[in-house]
Length: 162
Image (cartoon, rainbow, N blue to C red):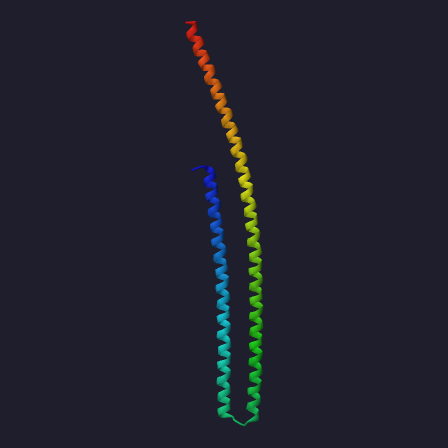
């Protein structure tokens, strides 16, 4: 296996490792967003259930009493405000996650471009090295041939003198 093949294998393995890393990171972010959505749904259901139960209890025990009706109205307003607050908070968190994903995407794209440039640079260096090596091998072959010819000439000269 040539060095070139080894370098290409290393590059391909690096690409695969980078792709797996980005896939795992994206999956983790996605699962976290799903978890946040489930928590929001659970919280809204709990608030609504608690509100309904309190309202039912109030209706059964204190029907017609203005004081309790006003309290129930305040509770409704407080629960509505809480729902809006939680919704706004989750919306902000979702926006932050989206911004982080966009940042991550831009960073990943920039890294891929840099890696592609690095690969091109390494390919150019490899080609230069290959040409230089081929030239040096050719020079060595020529020197070897010259040395062999000189040795043969000396041997022939030595046998003629005897």
